[in-house]
Image (cartoon, rainbow, N blue to C red):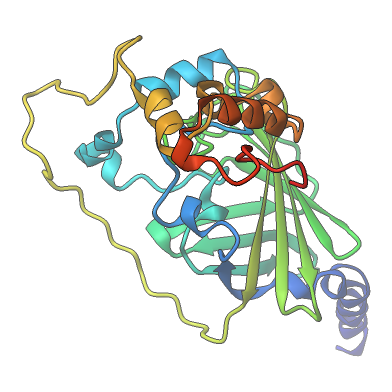
Amino acid sequence: MHCSFRPLLASILIFFLTSSVQAQGIFGHWDPIMHEDFEERIPGPFVGDYAGLPINEAARMRADSWQPSLLTLPEHQCKPHPSTYGFRGVGNLYIWQELDPNSLALVKIGTHIRWQAQRREIWMDGRPHPDEMAPHTWQGFSTGQWEGDTLVVTTTHLKAGWMRRNGLALSDQATMVERFTPQGDDEAILHIYMIQDPVYLNNVFFKSNGFSKRAGITMQPYPCRPATEVVRAPGDIPHNLPGESTYAAEFSEMLGVPMEAGRGGGITMLPEFMEVVREWRNENMTAEERNGDGNIFPVSE
């Protein structure tokens, strides 16, 4: 009995000296921090606002054909956020680790987001990603590794999802790399994700999120049942045909910016685009909009 105890003790010591102490900071219950991007994440972005995003023409056409009322269809009502968006949602987050019962080695990390019960597995045991014919899911297939106290996660095999809640889509060929880093004595997490998609992106789509330590340790279930919200004829799917969308013009008029400002990609991703906006505004503003020096965008800006 004494001899059988020694290997177990050794395994426990190895575990605490390698896996566990590296990143205890990310485990536990968390609340999303949204004070810097509240409008995008709660009421949602404006339709036609693709500014600053690395999208291509296919993504633009797909988003222009989208209508918000699509979400009233029963088959769309209970869809969970894919992992490419879920961490920007509104739900509380729980992160835990699962160990091998014999060696106590870290096998996988689990995450659960309350909204639509988004549950995810991040494999930490060195297994490879499956081949391209394996099923795609909302959360995808994720593997992780430690870089210091930062958890780095690579995700493939995703269902077609979205990058923004205004029709901007991601294809089922998208892949994602994330970094979860504890902050401030483990009282917060910085979450960074980078997405590549050969179908809808011409560069890396980058976003960052924050989470703060949550005092509560309970998470209520999230049952969802589809219902008929709008009575429609069979086969009636809300959409815009090519050339029918008014999103770009409405966004331009509402914010007082040139039409191309909301179209995304290219120069709209660079700070230099503000010079284009300044010139357009100074040429198109009304007399009431002008300030004392005749320029709505002072040089000091």
